Length: 327
Image (tube, rainbow, N blue to C red; front, side, top):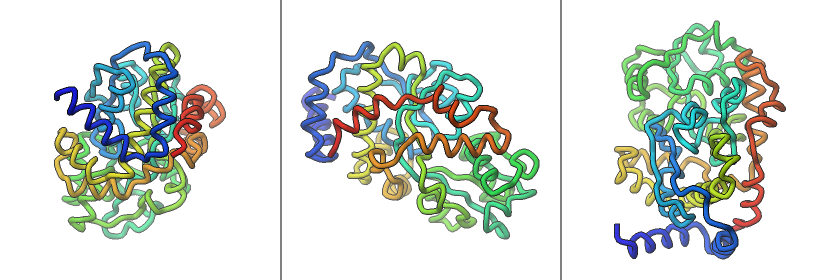
């Protein structure tokens, strides 16, 4: 893409995220040294709720990154091993990773409300999952939900986690599993096709709607060794999150054009429903504490929420950016 077109596209994105935040955004960058490293790698994961990291390219380039890569890797494990530098990831996954000593650092909440639990006939609440088969691409999240209502996530539910999200969706469609924890755009497709019914919608159903489901996390060593680059990455992702909230139609089109998803209608619906504009208002530490407590109560992790927060989070970059990006 020619430089003039790239710059024009970036300025268009920045303008859409709110004129009030543009001046401090530019001033803050001008006062900072360039990033210590100009290559940054993200996880590529089949959940389009991760949209901010998929449409942040020009914002990242404006922050000084010349080489932006998307790796076909599951988020938390890839961050921990250093296969990727950053990714959105689910809060319970992050808590579980920190509990086992993995090199993952949560940096910010990004959005609320993306996952939906679908059930077949006879399943109308989470407690109805006792003795049932549940498909989930993220079993840690699903287990936290089961534990919250008093079920034993090990003994009371049969988990089906093999294969891809597409295969799990197909199994639910064909009646081979009783329930399915769907992520966007699978959730929107199932609703549109009237397959099964929604048991829990984290966009509107408490307590799930009150906490960040997805946070931005970075590799611990990267964050320690490259603090300037870390802040610049986070700033780009948060601006991209504002873009998702302001222009879901344009973001959905970009996701389709760049091959992150195939169905524009489902992508647009998901982006319109997910709360991308709450990162300034909600406290990500509350979300980490909530999910860590659920996992510990279920015996799925050994660490206390306080230990998870102390060893696996770093909110200083977010605190600085909240002051800078007040729009």
